[in-house]
Length: 308
Image (cartoon, rainbow, N blue to C red; front, side):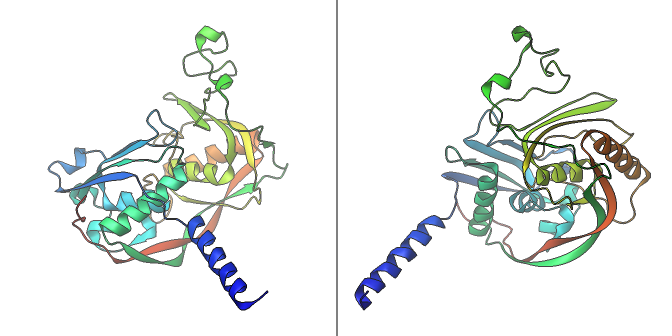
């Protein structure tokens, strides 16, 4: 191979790698700074639309504090962000709020949308950051003494799994014949709850997703120590201790309020309840543990976004 041929080959490889690393971006995005909204405590931040919803090609972040935008973009807990109070502080009542409406490319996944939001924050708010590691008190998800009872996935949900009463296959509009939520294409988790219990169905689901859900309901960091890397089909049912949230479906990085310091009595009850249910139904359990996680340190961020 002569020098010119080798040079052309290297250029071709470089162009291919650059194409593979093309930046993920929203097709169109509108960003509006709202400042500190009057009655901020009553202004609930909402994220609607996007992959896995009825409107997958449009996503809206309404009255969202910067902290939640960063949490959503980088899939971290609120206590994993360090920076100025307006961008990383916990006082949501007095936080600056933002509205963002974006057009999502067809077929984009939730993980890709999170990366698009990262790039939007870098472009519009000039966000730059670096990562450090920090140890937190939390729990590890481990395999129980009797071994895992998880079943390898049969694949993503299909249209035939969306059962309705008219099919004769459901016991209610929400629950299939086995008493757990039915699923449909685009969503691999379903949740049903009342004041006493919650029933959850997972299809083609990784344990990293289960860890995210446990982090949400237990208000504590949970790390996967099972060593199980596949995707699984399973159901999980447990009673709800007082003060405990149902296992709401959680989008990557959706706002999680974690408890600082020693666990509360309600949190301890919740951990015991969920751990006992998982050990009986899934062959998994929760154990107190130190959890090492990344912390995002904000180096620079602008409060006023650049023009749309």
